Length: 119
Image 1 (cartoon, rainbow, N blue to C red):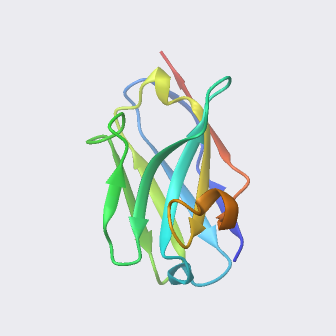
Image 2 (image 1 turned 120 degrees about the vertical axis):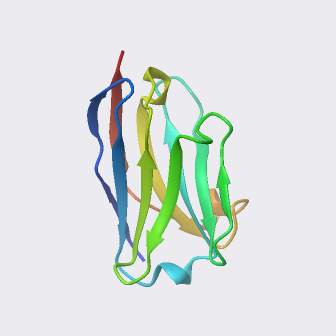
C-alpha cells in the first residue's frame, strides 16, 4: 500500500492546517497508522498514532492541539493541527505498519509534506 501526504503549507502561528494521507489500498491492512515529523537538525519524532481498533496516541507536545482521524471509505488518514506554533515547523510523514516498534523497519511511508509556521 502506497501513502501520499498532502495539505502542508505556510501558516501563521495560531493558525490551523489539516494534513491528509491517501492510501492506495485498505488502511485497515495496517495495525497502526501514524504521523511523524522531522525538523532540520532534529530526530524524527512520533506525533500521533491510531490503532486499527481506534486507540489514539499523541505526543505531549501536540496533545490538545492535534487530532488524528481516518476515513475508511476514502482510505485516508488525517491530522488536524490547531493552535500551531513555530516549533511545529517540520516535514510531516504518514506511515502505516504492523506495530509502532516496527514502523521504521517494516512500515510503509509517504514522501512527506512540509509544514512551516511563521511566528
